[in-house]
Length: 122
Length: 106
Image (cartoon, rainbow over all chains, first blue to last red):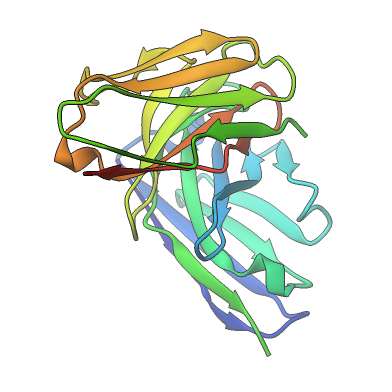
């Protein structure tokens, strides 16, 4: 069971970026997934979640209207599209699997990727 | 948003000690509470879910308790490998995390 993030990098304020998460080792479509971020030296912040089928998405107020979460169950991939980026979006972004399969519920996360760093700076 | 307040923010204890970390929610979250361990440069690791259920593969010296608004994580016999930062997370509604407790070994 593995999640591998990619797509992080340096972007200017106001810019855009797409993060990807590739999953393996489990039945991808049966699990909801979320992104959790961690600013340098700070705590954890849930960013967004998506149901197994992709039909329901949820966002933290801090990113609503700027980030878009989607998944491709044929490719076992999860994408987070970040737009209108701000300095405070600088963080390591983790892809995380909800612990329980089935319908979307806010949940604990028992599988995490290694994270990908997004740096917003001019 | 539900605010999660962890205490203490840091603690130092000796190998073999029992340590307890507390997490308080700003409103009731029933038993929708998880605990994570995070080591520097690594992703968090789930220890406890549903307030007191031990995640598979996690040593039995870790235990969780509580319901409503007050929860605790106890490490019954602290080991050198337990040096880490611990976070609580509520998932009764949109998930929020506590500020973390850094555990050092004396």
